[in-house]
Length: 114
Image (cartoon, rainbow, N blue to C red; front, side, top):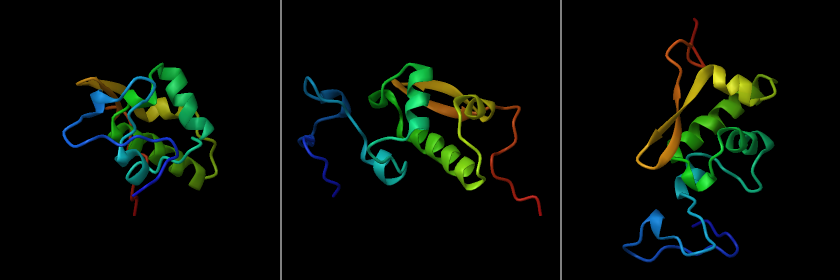
């Protein structure tokens, strides 16, 4: 289990909406599948700032898409930017959470062109 100093873990039966005053909800998937690390990267913070939502409002799948884009950019020695991210993704809001979906007019970020 991941330990974060000062974190309070939910009691059985509690949901993400039950965070006590002064606390936010961060999903385990952010750290496991989304590869979120604290402190967060500059690019990730720029995404939150540009779209004007809080990390606690992000769906874990949205986290995966942001981090995947950042990994691809860095692997290709390209600086990840919000404007580049927006070429491939658009914001999506559903059931109280923000995520990102692929723009219909774009190719996938990674393709096998062999």
